[in-house]
Image (cartoon, rainbow, N blue to C red; front, side, top):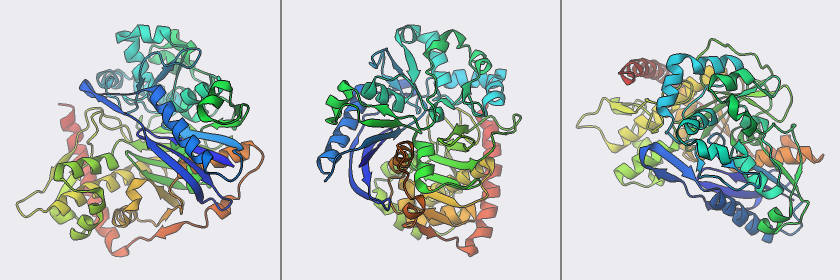
Length: 482
């Protein structure tokens, strides 16, 4: 039995699936996310590693048979600096971090972001490794001096479990990997002034590489030494694989803490003069890529609104039902993240706004306006990513049927919801099974999905709403620069 482990930003989950792709055992526990003054967001590698041990031990203890492999996935971006033995040289810096906001703005003004995008098809944002590393190189060089590797969450956990220093190509894709060759673009590294730190970048592992649990990892997890371990892809492509995205043009909407929109493509070609945003991610299959637009909007904004109004997340559905399409004239721009937006445009100064409020506005109108604006952001992302095929969706946001219907109406297409919500771990297990020579029946695993249909009467209304959203966004972008 393969245990899939999804190491999210705030939650780590372990899952075992049956032959039909449904979870038969699972466990989860929270990770600590430290929000510090000045927009700093950090995590402790040992604490995150402890969450992995907790969920793996819990699941393994309840299984009828032996564990045959461990399949890791998890959050991407950020910066997890370690020494040769895998010990953190400083707290990990999260992809949510905003310390490099001003640096990113300078890069945008000077053309650095454009230059890197031309070479790797990846836009940079404050929480990406390049911006954080460059910031540390100026303000905290001793941390980089002490490090042996500048990597990400999944490969940091892998190093502590297996002793291997490596990285999955999906993680390395942003922003320095040429997706066509799966090799680092040295000129892109030079463009951000990090050539003298080149030794900190681990070489990407070959697709579907299998590692082995070492003695330290075995003691931590209570599993046998030598157990096969796979690491990657990280959670965005893992979720696409787990949801059923298999044909070029198919896409997936992940309505989680942030909103990730991805489309599968069999071509590494891109417009080098396009908006320098999003990511061009390598997948475990040679010649296949994901054009990813991971926006910073998402359920974090809904959580903020729940705190503001003193309501429970479970009340969102009834509040959406209480307000019809158009939210009683209330409109919103959903950019609530302290680090701005990263897709389908990059602007560290992006901020939210609500308009059309009156004394007649109800809580449901404000909630619906935010949910509709996030759906408009998804449409913007999918237009940039090139969605043409079937659309899948996952994440906490699609637990709300009414919000999922809003997404379907705004996007003008039905949405396929996988029968099991653990799609990140599911994708990691699918990749691991293939790497071990025992591929799962992906058609069977997809049979439990349900479809949320479009309500034709709402499509025209939301087309105009999207045009209004774009006009408001264009006006706001001009104001953010002031």
